[in-house]
Length: 157
View 1 (cartoon, rainbow, N blue to C red):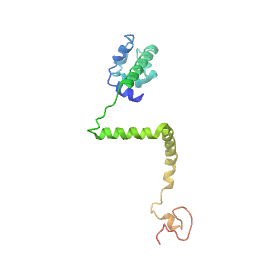
View 2 (view 1 turned 180 degrees about the horizontal axis):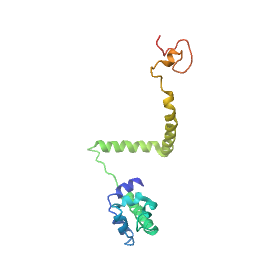
View 3 (view 1 turned 30 degrees about the horizontal axis):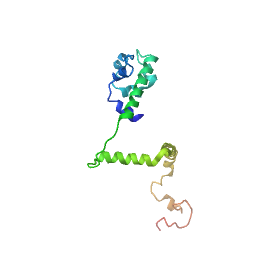
View 4 (view 1 turned 135 degrees about the horizontal axis):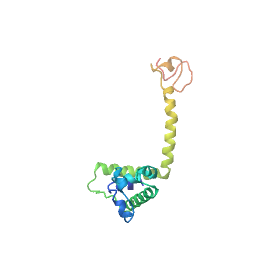
């Protein structure tokens, strides 16, 4: 729910108390600098439990309340666009959303595959770069495709 956590960032941490009907002690969270619901939402149980005065029950309740607020935000927030007065940011958003929709459910797998390929090729690229003079393979009788010949159409005579 990254989008809903972004919107939850505008809610002060005191809203967590409302969600838990006053059963949540926020003093330790506020003292530690947690000012928004988003900060709690993104912190995670381990980080919250490391805070002085925050035990397992407080951490779990705070996270449950933050998730509940994030879900509520996700269900109620809507985006409105004025089609009669388009703005560059609105146009960029629509293009990005269309790209995501067209990519469909395979997007995550494609990104993961591209990342793995980038990592593998990144190590090989320095060795594959052309010689410093740019003509090393031509002067040795090679061609752009790696075949040996007496005269390559890719090399100057």
